Image 1 (tube, rainbow, N blue to C red):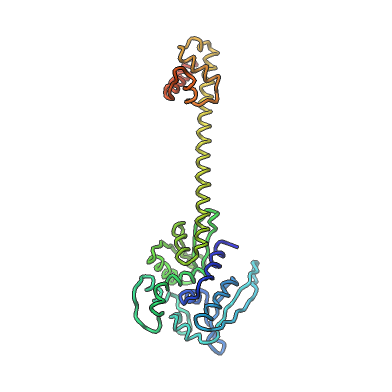
Image 2 (cartoon, rainbow, N blue to C red):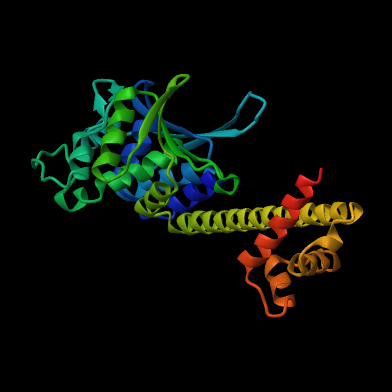
Length: 319
């Protein structure tokens, strides 16, 4: 099961709300006439189909019909269609979703106003006042259930997106997110408009907002593990680079000392240079600090480096 599927499964555990149903109808629904007006909602998730059925039953006491058919594409996924055949006009009027026989392409004003925490008029077309505070959040929950997707955070590619067939609706979703403090972006892809978040902190905040706390905690855990692993790798690479650099520098000095010895120059050096040369040859793996501790009296790192550089310079002058 994908990460997005886990999120959606968690969202279906929430109490039925009109805002969630409103988004699901708006984004997955279509109207038809078979002697009377019908409403059909399509999903590839059995869990979501069951949740939609429960929403209709709990909120409007409407019993939907769930129909299943197999896709003819290579994926062979099952498609679930939730069908309402009674009180459709009344339902759409109450949710401000229909204009004549077409579902609106934008978003109900009640949802937009809810995201601004503003009081709107008392028309029968809008939700009761006690429902308005969370209407926008409930709508976002339904929007993600309808067409939401997420990249697997374990891959380190953070993105959460919601697809809309209509640009107007995508822009309305973007406005809601903006009102709630999110920086959503829109791109056109094939026959859809995709609203997305790409910052990990915003994705975690969005999951919290719509009530997917278990998914948020899992996302956060994965992110922390990836960051710690990345930090460990960078530290390891840094230490390896330092070790290689130290070994290379030590070998360069050893080669210089061997060259001076071949040229019979080593024996003519001052005592302090002969001493450090002999120590370097005897302890090729020792650090600069360790070499300094072997001298009597002990010598600091800068003093040891000065003597080693002197040996390198003398070697180069003799070549």
